[in-house]
Length: 247
Ligand code: BTN
Image 1 (spheres, helix red, strand yellow):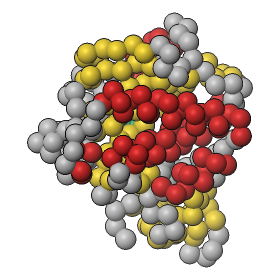
Image 2 (cartoon, rainbow, N blue to C red):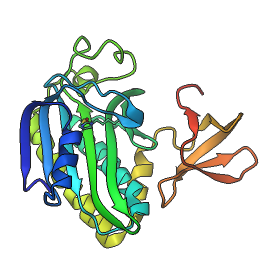
Image 3 (cartoon, rainbow, N blue to C red):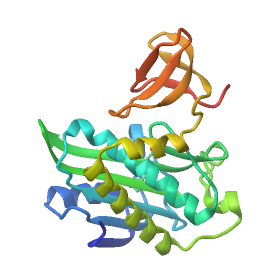
């Protein structure tokens, strides 16, 4: 990964640019990095505030020879790698909030956006976008997210060298990606669960109309969240609304 790294100062979104590259046939492992993004995108069509050069904003183009059904596993691979690298660099242990938000002190530190083009049983490309709030001060965080997001600088009082960070991130992603292809998902699943936010804790969630309580028990092979219901059954959740922050 990252044999080809395309570096921009300011672009709309590394994700959008990476998708264009992918459609034009760029190699597996191409990485697009930007110092700042004028129109960073998050999951669920949300905005991702990144018009500052204090964070890591990059997208990786992958062309894995796996079934499109398994694509969510690669997002979980990436979340695990992010947790490991952040821990190694900052000596703080982030939590992975299912499916793929990274939290420190209950605030969002990093996010992952995976987009792919596939047909039937073939993935043409999968673009994994990674955003990490690194050196922003509290004042530099966008007003609208200041109380729910955080940066490594805010949490540790230290500043971090971004190039070193990116190198380590790509190395670790390459290693875990290869391990995933060679050995399957089980090792990733185990590491993901070690970092899982609210693992074995009770949360309230809503599927359809009814509010329920359950204990988070981990993730399934297909990326579903495993929830033990009050009656002791294990449910697989795909897009349930979980009330993460009340207990
Ligand atoms: C989320 O938590 O909703 C996902 C955020 C993903 C942000 C990254 S920053 C690099 C890449 N380019 C984008 O426009 N988005 C992703």
